[in-house]
Image (cartoon, rainbow, N blue to C red; front, side):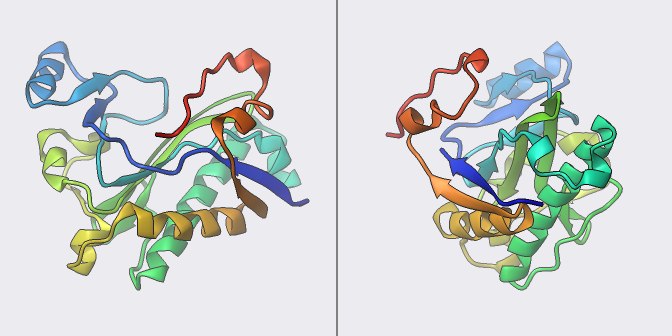
Amino acid sequence: MSSNTIKILRFGALEYNRAYKEYSSDEEMYLRSLGADFVRTNRGGLITFHGPGQLVAYPILNLTQFIPQANRRKSALGMRWYVKTLEEVVIQVCSEYNLQGSRSPHTGVWVGDNKICAMGVHNSQLITSHGLALNCNVDLDWFTKIIPCGIIGKGVTSLTSELNQEIKIEEVRPVLVKHFGDQFSAQMEDCSPEDLEKYLPSELNLTLEPDS
C-alpha cells in the first residue's frame, strides 16, 4: 500500500454539549432541558454524547487510496476494514497509557465492560465522514442521561477515570495523530482551513472557518 498524506484541520474538542441520533421527541426535550443540543445525523449507530473533554476525529478519506486490495471488491468490506483500523488506532493510544483497550461485538474501543471511545461512521462511495470520540477528561455524568449507543448493561469510561489523574486532550492529540498515521500508512500534516480547501472536492461545497 503506497504512502498517503493526511491533512489535519482539527483534532479537538467540542466546547458545548450535544446529544446525537434517534430518540423520541420527549427524550429530546428532556436532554435540551439539561442544556444539551440535540442533533439527528446520518452516521451509523444509535445515540451518543459529544462534549468538552472528548478528542473528536472526523476523517474525510477516500478509502480506495487506503484499503488493501483484497478489501476493495465490495464497499462493505472496505468499511469493515476502516472501522477495524480506527479501533486499532485507539487501542494503540490506550496502550501508551498502559491501558488494555479491546474490541467487542459492539463498535468502538472498550476497557473492560466500559466504552472509552465511541465510533459512528458514514460513507458515500467509500468517501468517509463522521468518525470517533475518545473520552479524555469528559464529564461522564452526561452518559447517565442516555443509553449510549443503545447498549444496555455496559458503562462508559475515560482516560482520566481509568488512570485516576486528569488527562487532557492537548496531551492525547499528538499520540492519536501518530498512531493514526501509523495505522493508515500515512504522513500526517497540519494545515489551515484555507489550505484544506485546496484538497477537498469542490462538490462538497464546504465553508471552513479559521481556528480561533
